[in-house]
Amino acid sequence: MSTSPGLPPIVERLEKGQKTPICVIVVGMAGSGKSSLMAQMQYHAANKAKPTTTTKQDKADGEGEPKADEDGETAIDQQQQQQENVAAASTVPTYCINLDPATHHLAYGAAIDIRDTINYKEVMRQHKLGPNGAILTSLNLLTTKFDQIMAILEQRAYGQSEKKEPDDEEETNETEKGEETTEEENDEDDNIAAIGMDYILVDTPGQIEAFTWSASGTIVSESLASAFPTVLCFVVDTARCASSPNTFMSNMLYACSMFYRTRLPLVIVFNKNDVVPHDFCMEWMKDYEAFQEALDESMDSNTNNSATMTSTGFYGSLTRSLSLVLDEFYSNFAHCCGVSAITGDGMDDFWKCIDKAAREDFVLDYVEDLKNRLEEQQAKQQAIQRVAMKRLQRDAAQGQR
Image (tube, rainbow, N blue to C red; front, side, top):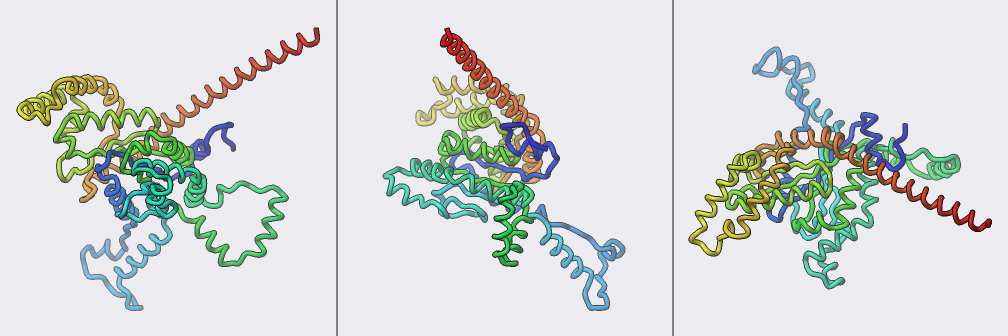
């Protein structure tokens, strides 16, 4: 079975019903807690993937004392050993990628780190760039080799089965080369091919514009979406939104623009739920009048403070108009949740939103939209070819005269 010309390999894998890991691209404003959320996602996914088993003796005795067998091993020891064996044979829950070259410390374990390949400070010095320009240049340099990263991800996710079948000449050459390889190298290749993962987590730079509005960001997101069901996770600082409705509107406007730019399924995550509950954000998204009342309260509280009069004048009118425009965006948007990257509160709901967006919205919306765009592009190319052929026939006819 083969896909139609021009369609990415993810379409064929979805049609076959093949198990594919979900790719989560974490984006958000600077200081919203993207890296902290990445660490919590890695930790929570690892704990969620741990198997839990109970022995028959535990079910029969309840909370009774474990009994030792003839070899002196208790039922708990056997259970722990069984869990370790199952965990060793299970897939790796997450595979993390760091695309922020300017970070000094990562709270999570990154399997692929841009800092291992590109020296951010050297880019600044050699190209005489500022901080933001160096981040953008570092991403562009990494993108030139992103096909190698995709090859690593596909090998980890799908193993040797994704390799193309070689021709007769290639088989002969590979046979000669295979005789020179050792058994240890073959074992290592088998181990690499056997590794899988449930999620691919991608951490983006703190300066959101460097990724979302650059050519490198588009290449990275489209490349990942061509091989895996991909979800865009937009992280919002709930505490900042609570202090100003204008900040909330700015975040929603940015999320809306990214949603229509990438066309990927979007999950809005209200972070720092341990500081301020996110209930008011959900209410503002569902109730237009509630957001207007919050703007009025913000305007009244800032009337005597000239430094913070942001809800009056042009900015206040713009915010009110945008809230009415985004009401349509809210009505068609259902994937949002509140989490705490520190305490882990709300992570279960977060994974449910991610899974639903990847398994439903990606297939129904993104893949179908991609097919339609490819059909339109092929139709345009065929129309251009027909016009060129008619022009050629006309010129040939005039030449014969």
